[in-house]
Length: 293
Picture 1: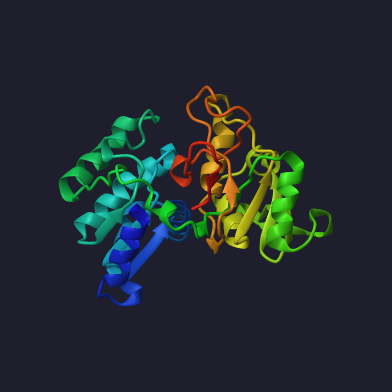
Picture 2 (picture 1 turned 60 degrees about the vertical axis):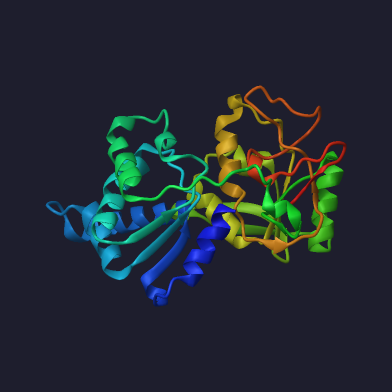
């Protein structure tokens, strides 16, 4: 319910459209890094690009909503420490959603001690609310929306059947699509009518970043991924890719069956289960498959 509450606040804010912004964390950071680079090229040395970008944002924005705030990159951590401080000092109302409390942001990261001043600022300047899970996942009450599709069990046949149900054709009849991603690179997938098809290795086993995955997510309303392995800590890089892929554009999908997600670093979970490392997107019912919500 975190993103839903953010959306309610954003929609209710009596501000001009140009004075408020609601965006996903990864999209926000790509935009910030692009602005910093452009300013460095245009202004040259002697200019503080991070502070300048923060001030430019603050002149235009009164409300900034960042969804799925998670810091995993040392470069992002160093930029955010100063950028968010500038926004707060300039009077911008900043709202975050995150799966971690402030004290656990960038936990175990390189040079984390340089990031902790931002944590102190957030805890001092912001009201922090924890949404209890005692009431269950409210999305499971109305299984209408599926954030993409992580395949049910059934191997290759299950994957192709899911694609056929959504795209209206066999995988073999799909067109080879090419997605422009970051820095002029391209990612190739099979696709038809906004539905993409790829193997887990093609998407998450490659050297791709968040910007690449966002480009894929923006291209398709649904994504069928074949061959998702049991995810463990030994597959950390592939898991990171899955975590970025999952927030794709939502399309109504009723009662789409998906498996239970494996738990823990040792791959614990029901024998033979396949899934995505995104526990809050799974509903478990004893004796039945999970349902996409």
